Length: 240
Image (cartoon, rainbow, N blue to C red; front, side, top):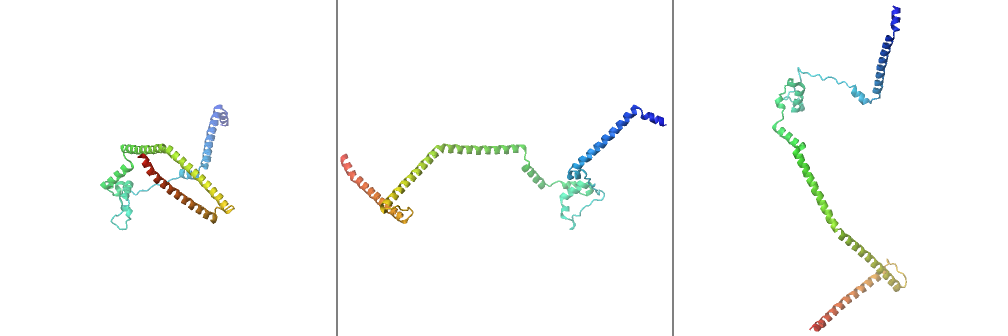
């Protein structure tokens, strides 16, 4: 017996079979070890979801709970059509619910159709809405371009007016500077020393000078009217 066992173990065929079995067992053990190591690295939430085993929902089909809608102690939510639909979907005919009563009424059906039309309109309506919005967008763009074109046409005049206003402001500032220097020079000549333009003495002198200039302008205007009135009869006689 020992010779047969020794001769069997010593054959090349038996050695190959043993080596093949050992290699398969090693590969299986390696795959299991690798899988366990990968599972350990998974997040806790994923492992919890993978290991979740929900309890079966035991339904009492033979004697289901049927609420008494005429009883005051029955909750209001168990008297609604929604709860009846839920019971019929869970227990079927054993729920005691008439399926014909689960269909929506005419008013509810009209409301559902209205909501369907509002939130899910037909393709033609959607295309019409898109075309209307595109038309409105195009009209707004054309109106904006029209306003821009009109403003661009006014741009040369606006630039010219701005330059003119700027030049007038600059000229006015220059005239005020010249006038200020002239008044300071006149105040120095009148008082014999430099005068602070913020002093009351200088302001009184300026008011007096402006009063005199106003009087002179008034006299010149009157003289001009008198001269024009005196020349008009002579011009009439010469024309005759």
